Structure formats: structure tokens, C-alpha cells
Image 1 (tube, rainbow, N blue to C red):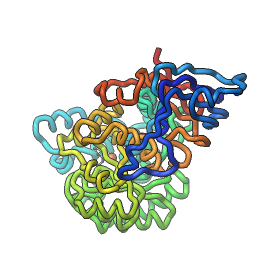
Image 2 (cartoon, helix red, strand yellow; image 1 turned 90 degrees about the vertical axis):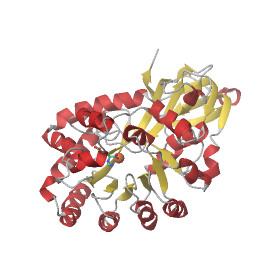
Image 3 (cartoon, helix red, strand yellow; image 1 turned 60 degrees about the vertical axis):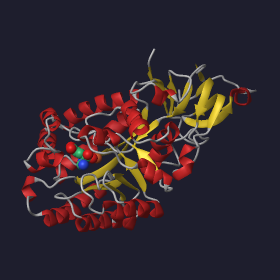
Image 4 (cartoon, rainbow, N blue to C red; image 1 turned 90 degrees about the horizontal axis):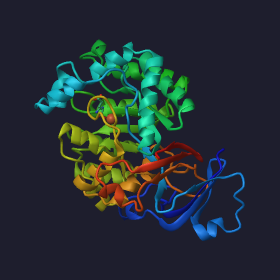
Length: 416
Ligand code: NIG
Ligand code: FE
């Protein structure tokens, strides 16, 4: 049954809207007190004050959930993850705690290449089982849509394997998956010292086959010193756009390379990380309407300074927040941690954080017309907190308050 009524909520945080919110607008989360929601056939039919919504409404054929004393929000959208991978890198993480840097590890043959080997060796079934567990965990944190990237194959067959696993998981798991091709995640040993040739290979082989099989909606690249240059990124992304991919970038994460400027020039949908992005680059992104997807879990895990959320928002830019869940730079999918980092270390208000995790996350995966807010006509993707106010999300530090998750009008998780 996909007909459900959530009634008597202490408050409904609607995050209302059908497009990304920038600057001042990020504060507006549209709270309805004493509210109810009617979801019919998985789609939100009504939302508003309980008295008005339920008056004269025939509830037959509806499951009714009483949300008295509880806060209700749209499902979270985790718009940047690398959740399909083989193997783990706990050694490397602990070396980093002792002082080694991410780039030193990468240069000495560790880092992403370790995960590439393990992912190439893994069977589809193994990756599927791992992916399923990880999606279950995301769902418990209230995530109802996730973006997932390939990028641990680097050669096309494994990239396709990762994307096909996501296709299967999307069919079999309640959490919706948006797929991104990220063949340009690192330079594989086979192409060491031949990055330009590798870019050509990605264009002629990777992009082509992924497109032919319709396996990804987005194309992403790790634009970084000693990985892919601005020119190489421009070449790959322009080609990808010509082929019909939407664009994302890992930009200015470790070194200020001008990734934010390139993101603005190309008008990519979102540019992510941005720890080192210049003022000029961030303002150019704002002017081109590029969403800044910030990943504080990664900065935390790498012990780097946080991206400048306040500067971006105060200057009228749009920020999304995501976990960057991956086995190297950020092995956590914790939304409560993300909220704590956003509010405490990045000085975002809890309202801005909610916008960043809902409607702006949805916009960062080009789904703002169907998810990311509790508006009539959108998917019935809803979470109910075991708390009377959304303000507990920041206040009850790093604790998961999600009690119930509803996906397309069905309860898919409920903590008693
Ligand atoms: O977003 N920066 C590049 N890619 C990932 C890290 C992937 C990994 O270390 O396995 C990131 O942080
Ligand atoms: Fe990433």
C-alpha cells in the first residue's frame, strides 16, 4: 500500500520549493505546526494544518501514522557518495592519523589505487551485498535518495560493473540511486605518466559505452594537482556534456587549482569539496548558478580546514551538504555527524543545513521537481524524528534521531 496519512505532527518542516535555494533563502524551511500529510499512490496529495487537511477526508484505504509530539521532514538527499567499492583502507587511515597526508599516500601507490584493485577483483554479487548493507545504513539515517559514483575501476569494464550494481540495487532497495560515471577518479597504473592518453581513453571508450548502455546520468572528475588538470578536466567534461551527461566536479579539494572557476565556466550542476576554492571562483560559481556541494566529513577525516559555507551563503550562493561516503578520505555515511560539522564548525544555521540536505541536495542531483521537499505532487519521501523540533538535529549532537522513514508512501524503516 502506498497510501499513508501522517497526522498530528508537532511540526512539519516542508523545505518547500521546486528549485534550489541560495543565500538568504536557505533559512526558509517552511514549518507548519500541528500538521498532517496525505500521501496517495506514493505521491504527496495534501500537506497543511491537521484540522484543514483531515477535515472531511475519507481515510479508508490509508495507513495512519500518528506523529504526535514529533518533527517531520522530507527524506534527506545524500548527493555525493562513492558507496560501491571493494576492500577497505583502515591501514592508510591510521597512517594519516600519525601524520601522513592523503596525497603522500596516493603518490606512494596507496590511496584510491588500493580500492581500485579490490573493486576490480570483486564480483557483482559481492558488490551488490556490500552496497545493500550500506544502503540500509543510509536509510536508517533518513536518506531516501543517494548519488553513487563509479571510479574504482578506472578501466571501463569495472566502471560498468559498479554502475550495473547500482542499477540492480536501485530496483531492489527502497533508497533511490542517482548514478554518476567517474572514470576520471585517478590515473590507473596502466596509464602512469600518460594522463592525456587516459583522458582520450575515457572519452572514446568509457563515456561511449556508459552512454550506450544508459548507465549514468552524470559525469564527474577529480580535478586536482597531480591528478587531472584544468585543461584535461575541461576536455573530458565538455565532451561528456556533448554526449548528454550532466556534469559534476571534485574541485579545489587539496590544492587551489581553479576548479571552482572551471565549474562556473562550464556551468556544471554542482562543484564539490571546494576546501581551497578562491573567492573569485566561488563568486563565479554563484553567478553561474553552480551549487556548492560541501563535504565536511572529508575535511574532518583529513583534518583539513572546512569549506567556507558562510562566505558562499552570505554572498548569495547555494550550498548542498553530502557525506562523500568512500573507503579512503571519508569512511562514514553519518548524517548526524554531517549535521554536527555543518552547524558547529561551518557556522551554518540548522535551517541552512536542512535546506542543504533536502531541496539543495535534490537540486544537486537534478531532482528538485520530484524530491527534497514536502510539497504536493512530490514523492512521499518523509522522515519522522523522535524529537519535537528539527532544532534537536543540531542540539542532540551526532545522535541519530530518525524514528521512521517513509519512501514513496511506504514505511521502510521504523525504530520502536
Ligand atoms: O571525494 N577526492 C577524490 N575522491 C574521493 C576520495 C576517494 C578515495 O579516497 O577513495 C573524495 O574524497
Ligand atoms: Fe568524492
